[in-house]
Amino acid sequence: MKEKELKEIRKILEESENPLYFYDDDTDGLCSYLLLKKKYGKGKGICVKGSPVLDEKFVRKVNEIMPDKVVILDMPIVTQDFIDKVNVPIIWIDHHEIQEREGVKIYNPRRWDKEDNRPTAYWCYRIVEENLWIGMVGTVGDWYLPKEYLGKFRKEHGLLKEDVKEPGEALFNTEFGKLVRIFNFVLKESVTNVKNVVSVLLKIEDPFEILEKKTSKGRFVYKMYEKINKGYDELLEKALNEIKDEKVIVFIYSAKKTTFTGDLSNELLHKFPNRLIIIGRVKEERVMFSLRSGKYKVSPLVKKAVSKVEGHGGGHLYSCGANIAKEDYIKFIDEIKKGVK
Ligand SMILES: [Mn+2]
Image 1 (cartoon, helix red, strand yellow):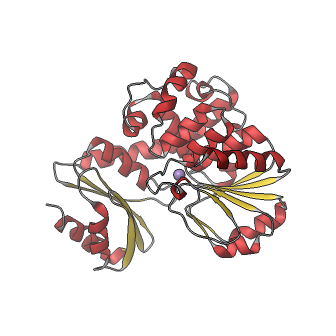
Image 2 (cartoon, protein in one colour):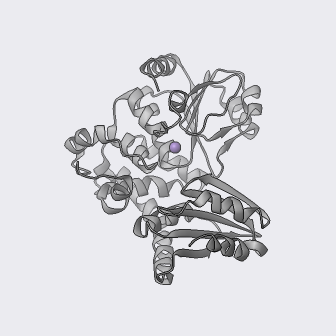
């Protein structure tokens, strides 16, 4: 993103009396919101939970709150219908593949460089230039390590050594990684609990309030995290116990409420970068998959496999998702295995 654009966004947010923010339900989306809301103070935020799409269902919220601006943060998809039905100016700060839309101002680094997908929180930090720790949580949480800020961050908080080389290392082997996990996991709570925890996070000024439970606000966040993390740790242990030395790791679980599919596959990928990780979560008649590898090209494998079963899937070269009918899921896994030599 160009400096001129960051300046433009600053001006818009300074002048807005009552902005309404919609943000994605991951660390990047959440931290983007926290950074802007902490800086500019005004307005309200809504976490778009469980879907990458901001659509006309959310128009009702806009009509209720009557903002003077709508600010969309880190949402992969916004429907034209949503934009058409909202009658205040909309800006969309994002780093996913650009979707051309009418009636919205899009700020996206890919506009200038197709390869530049630095996370939304990275740009929001560049906009506000304060609360670097929140910017780091959002940015590294989205698997990007902004090397230029490591020194400053370490100086301010003593977290993350300057020789940390890649995001996986920061996420799974450091105290800072735990902080990212805390932000990530509290978003898995109910809508009401997320609302509460976000209002608490807005008042937290230092990461150690949470990590070392130094204040009651920090303890509140930590407690919520612990409850969710218990379920995750149990699953991770179960998955690790089932792993032998096969090239393809498959772990299928069923959970009514919380989904840990992406988290599990990321952590296993970090532990086993040279294998192909398949994590599936059974939900009613479907199985939701997350596939990762540091070695095998996942997306062509997924494309081929979904063509032979009832389901759909896709994503990035080394990281994909898929949604497969339950009666076909074993076939889906077998098809993927066939392609791994
Ligand atoms: Mn993101």
